[in-house]
Amino acid sequence: MILARLSRAVREQNWFAVALEFVIVIAGVVIGFQITAWNADRAAAERADILTARLIADLRAEQWRVEGNTIYYAQVSDNAQRTIDALEGRREVEDETLVIEAFRATQIFSFPVIRTTYEELVSTGTIDLISDEALMTAAVEYYESGQDDLSFQDRDRTYRHAFFRLSERALYDALADTCAEPRTLEIGDYHALSGILDFPCDIVGHDAAIAAMAERLRADDDLLPLLRQRAVETSIESNSQIYWQLMFERILPPREAG
Image (cartoon, rainbow, N blue to C red; front, side):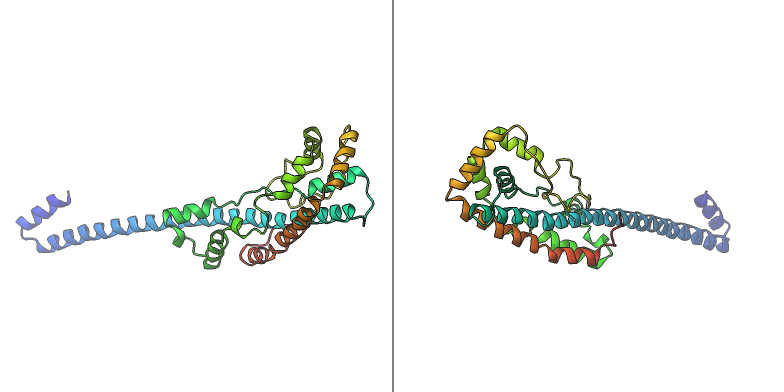
């Protein structure tokens, strides 16, 4: 249609019409490019909002995991120290208490680092979409620090395996079912963290196994050095989380109460 009008205007030497048609064509092209650019910008902004929200959600989960590490390993360390005190005669405890505390000293807070969004940002080269510089800088520091590499714990789990060697399977299963953290523990459940390991538990139907296990614990001279190491390494693990706790408080919106 435009080309037909332009051809007719040229034949008629209607230069005003020719100029007007050229202006219309150029304006159409410019507007088309502008609309395409607007759509691209809008799509990028929407993508940035989605990725930012996902990154914040991942870091929220990590904030909970760091809080869990702090509380959990403080309680593991306390259980290890109470076991040491009992074995060295500074505390008098029943066999069941000794076995439970020695078991709880073996425990591991096994929630892996949540890094899906960060890895997507890195692999797709879209880090620049995150306009919150403080948020992105903190995410890079946190994820690139290598959380597993920063752990102070014995990677060989020496005390844990020493406890396994002294245990009977049925008794250990009862301890795991009754005296460990709930298996239904969910990320973000702050209410469950305060007494995650320090809660009353009774082992029913294993009296003979408990007595035998307590006797083995008291007789094993190799256990005390491993317990001392466990008490110290988990105390360090707990206390070392403060840096990340403060970082999350600085970069993330305040948690909702409740």
